[in-house]
Image 1 (cartoon, rainbow, N blue to C red):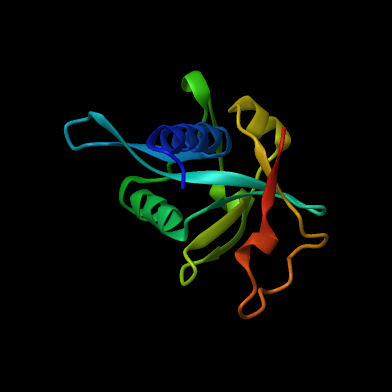
Image 2: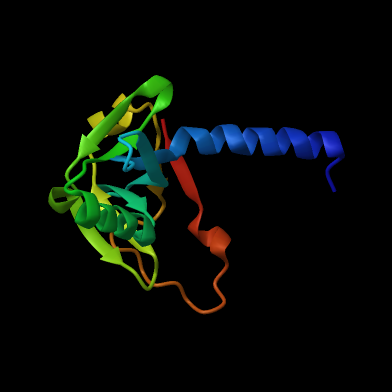
Length: 148
């Protein structure tokens, strides 16, 4: 069992690591009085042998779509450090969206990920999509490493 100090250090390291691999996925709207507001979720990026793509929650994309229906077409953006961001057209980038699983995937370039100063996950699987998990299979068998 770790000491309180060790637990704090582990927690801090975990947060610092998470900040390098997760990016805000957001859009900006206008209130009735003209002041701006933002809505957001998060995304991370997976590199497989065959593809590079972003992953977010389907409910985030559904929220953005509802916003677009109500307020007109609005760019969705990936946020980075120190105010960097990159906009993209969801319709051109969508790979798949599954509301039941609450997951959405999209195309993203290595250049865009570098621009927002984030890192990629690299799965250990050798093909994509990976095999379906087997019943009672340990999740640790699916560890993910990070590409610098």
